[in-house]
Image 1 (cartoon, helix red, strand yellow):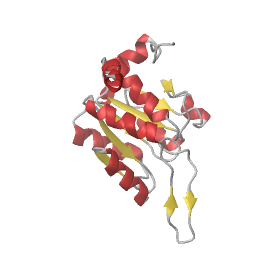
Image 2 (cartoon, rainbow, N blue to C red):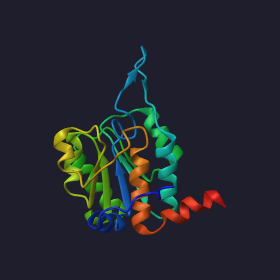
Image 3 (cartoon, helix red, strand yellow):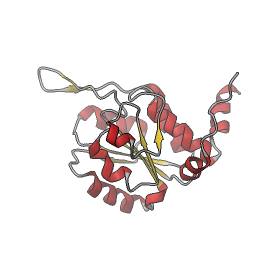
Image 4 (cartoon, rainbow, N blue to C red):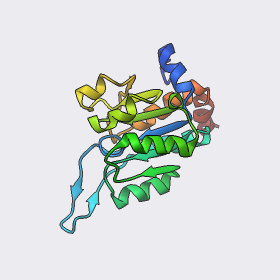
Length: 182
């Protein structure tokens, strides 16, 4: 049986160990990027339970979470509430401004923030945070700016993978996982 997870490179582990706030985009990160729109204008999004449980486990390790999204979908607000997301910024056209407000509200330095995104609108945060991450389907220019690219795809465990990386670097993952086998 292969040990999970594999050891990350030392520089990545050092950056992940300092994270106090994980910030996420939604479309193309917490979802697969597709948006289904019903005839009445309602948006339908699919979220993955692996990502949701990873977020909850990360909270138990003392890491707070945030969403900064350009859209304003009621389903996202509901999912954020279900998961206990600490900060939720919706309908944001300039993520740089929201990031500054978020850091002030959370009282964290840039090196204590991780961000996971997929498109160029995410770069103003990615180039400033301590751990910029991207999903494998991200725009090629975004991938160039990511310190970590998940193996799992968007909307199918990518966020969970990043949560596990952060928990591992902080020394919490083994205990967090083993509690389920007791």
